[in-house]
Length: 159
Image 1 (cartoon, rainbow, N blue to C red):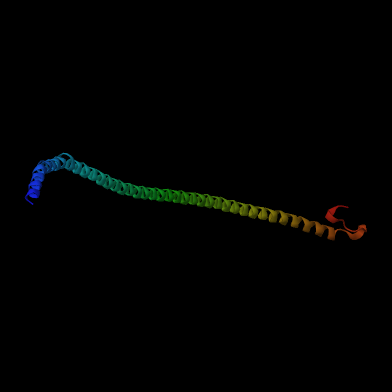
Image 2: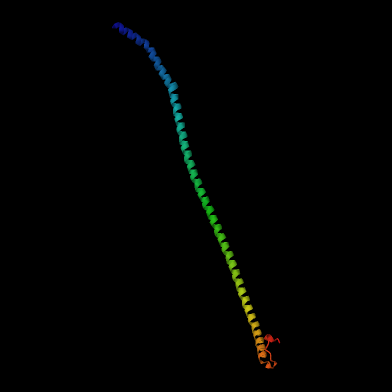
């Protein structure tokens, strides 16, 4: 057993440089590869997360701009509708004014025509009155004329 222990001790003594080499390799790996790799991965994660956060912020800003655009568009449509309504009201007022003016002119023409008709009626009455007096005088002359002629009296005073 002593010999086994000696062999085992020799093996362990021969393994010490290997263990030290493995420990040195682990330390070197940790400082040369692992820490820089963790730093690069952390930076990558920050950049990725930063890009995601920036994208979210950009999306939120785009949505805010879209809402602002929609609001401005709605305001512009309302302004256009108000302008159209104002033009429609002005056109309606202009039409009403034209109709009122035409109605006033028509009423003036009707009054003038009525006055003309009244003048014509008065003139016709006076002309008829003069004719009535002439006809009455002629009828009286015809009726009172000598009946000795033996013929029927002519109408209108003509023999």
